[in-house]
Image (cartoon, rainbow, N blue to C red; front, side):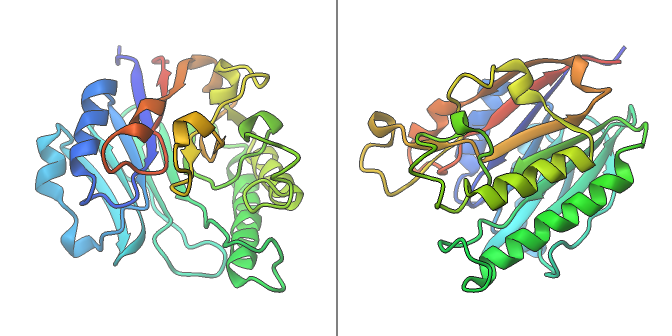
Length: 268
């Protein structure tokens, strides 16, 4: 029987800059699989040697020079399960891997969407909405698949009122606007996804994974948002036994503005 799988997702905000912090995350979580977003490194310069030194012999990555970028690091054997372009833009925002037990992990970095929540005035927001529409269409094609599947990443949307520090004040702020929340709900419904972090941690509890660099004292203000998510198919959801956000990582030296999110999944 395969041991329990510990999976971590983290927007690292530059892999090469925060390699030491990745090592600390790996040491503290003892993760089997780590999905990274915003690696900000092109494929030719991916730090494979340093990643393997952390115990990850199986690595998949897709990068853009200086921005975007996704990677899946695994201590267990994996094989490529494909990638796609979303929202009409050919960039490195998706990669997927298949584990030996057949489980497929999809790692996403959804566009942030800029500052103005109006697609007519903001091309970045328009791209984000198209990206979500594509995810909805794709979800409908995988919803009936019996393959165990996981969808993780920086989805750049905080859907619940308890996923933001102030629901009322953020209704017109990109990441918590009604149109984004509605479209993310459509993505989830189309793919028959279960938000397993909120399955473990009650939706009544305030929970964040991102705190702005702009805050003078982020911990004291605690004005966070839950932008980073782990979803599974309905059949896999009952096997999820734990979930947490490594909030302390936000306070480390030269941190990412995101904290790692972790789940444990029992074997079949």
